[in-house]
Image 1 (spheres, helix red, strand yellow):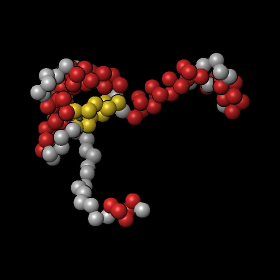
Image 2: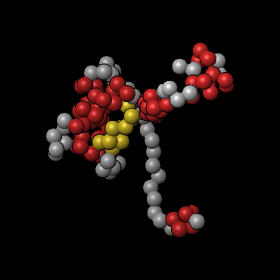
Image 3: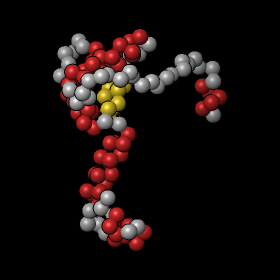
Length: 120
């Protein structure tokens, strides 16, 4: 159904690209800022209003701070910083583990898996 009603709509082919390596310590704020500004340049070249940039957890917090403290007229205000998939899932699983602690779930998993591997 969706294919039939959207087959005549114009669309552009999108690409997901990796940015080039920056030969600098990744944890420096200046390196994170350079990455964000380069993402803005690439997005502007393709007439993309909102730029999406994904970081691992440690760099995510730095990038969020940089974008949050950028001036209102800065092009960084059009950047959406995303947490990488691995760290997103780890945070989610940690939250579930915290909620489910003491519920007896460890006993159930102990029947299926070796008991020593449950806390992992």
